Amino acid sequence: QVQLQQWGAGLLKPSETLSLTCAVYGGSFSGYYWSWIRQPPGKGLEWIGEINHSGSNNYNPSLKSRVTISVDTSKNQFSVKLSSVTAADTAVYYCARGEHSSGAYGMDVWGQGTTVTVSS
Amino acid sequence: QSALTQPPSASGSPGQSVTISCTGTSSDVGGYNYVSWYQQHPGKAPKLMISEVSKRPSGVPDRFSGSKSGNTASLTVSGLQAEDEADYYCSSYAVSNNVVFGGGTKVTVL
Image (cartoon, rainbow over the protein chains, first blue to last red):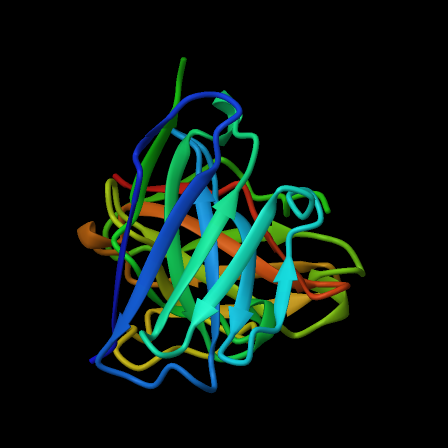
């Protein structure tokens, strides 16, 4: 059974760079698209972007200038970096798996979530 | 890309049905049969309930069904049970390889 385990810094200061990593256990890494999604406190979900095993990316246009998603196939891991964070980037960040690009077939496996708070 | 529009809340008594709408545009919901629905209980990660408008992943009860007409997709939960009380989010593939989510609907079982 596929599991996603994610980790990263939970408290950042404004202007710093958010960095999170998600590891895939118990299943294939290739053949899927690996996404990052976030959820501000009390609000809805927002897709950040995705990557596949060969490094092909798609990003949310509203975040594209600040986001980089990368992959390490040797470790079955993928990561997200979000630069110049502000309080508006405070959210629970999730990693997730999709069978097709841009969540077309849905995202069927999710990480446990990481709470990131941006505060001076 | 604007978020998809969902009603903030919906409710029904046990055994009844509730339908949640998700309205987008021809650039997302109306243009592709790639609408998904997620259930989220408080403090938990979302769970995929419906993909490609109406497909149920393995393990999802057949009480959950999806449909689409034009720019609006719908999720129907039949035979409401207490454990169905949760937030529900729709999402859609959108032009230029983007993903958009709805604002979420809180379903209350009365």
